[in-house]
Image 1 (cartoon, rainbow, N blue to C red):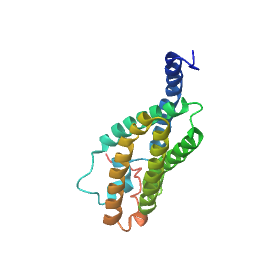
Image 2: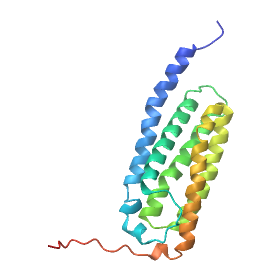
Image 3: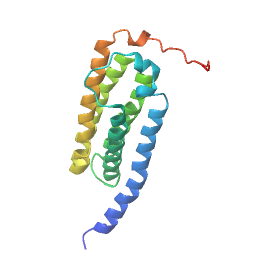
Image 4: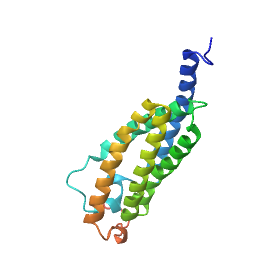
Length: 184
């Protein structure tokens, strides 16, 4: 027997990693989205001139949930590839792109930095592309699982760019104060 581990053992190892990575990435994404009000819940965002063609607010939660699940499964595949050449650097690159990913929501919706968020998205796309290539060298399926993420980042970048163009003063746009008055 020349195999170090059986297919069953490899599958079990992958599942152990996936049980950790999928919920962890979902939790991180959820926390990033809850740090500040997003979408129509954000009073500043309501004041912006938004592109006519954009996904409805509910779609963002659905899409990001699916993308985070795919990212978690992809990461589990790489974590389970012990001994694979380039595994450590692929995991490090994934971590960097994940930090960039999680920073976008507070930067855009919390700090109202539309232009900086656009630059961040471009850097994030490059980091995600490098991650995809690095994952593909180890496990091609892990890379393919990241392709929808890359596609969504292109859409997000286009939306951010359109918002930036339509709202050159977005950073200075003040949110209306919250009212504590009760109207009877």
